[in-house]
Length: 128
Image 1 (cartoon, one colour):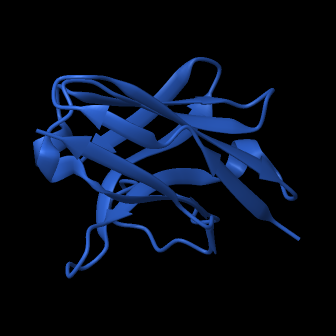
Image 2 (image 1 turned 60 degrees about the vertical axis):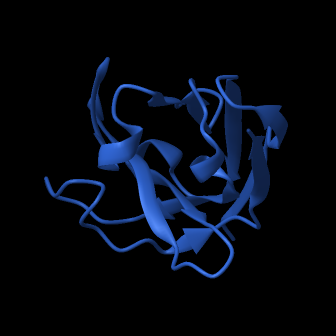
């Protein structure tokens, strides 16, 4: 059974930083494409960032356009954890952030794959 547990959310001011973590149990973590999604009130869930590991220190990451340059996704396969470092936060980043894992193989971008497992979410609130 695969379980994902997010942590690190909270209330911050615009311009601040937060780092989200997602610990994964079950399955072969290194084979998962890992992603972060978010859902704001009244809006659809959207892809924020994703990362695929190709071996050694080689990863491929993809981002929501509005997250590029501000957010960084990373993974630690030994710790079975994926991170989302969020800098220069804006009020429009306010949402519940979800971690997800995909068993998709191949070379498709993390933005394009379907995700099989989801965490419960962690709230991020950015005040102006």
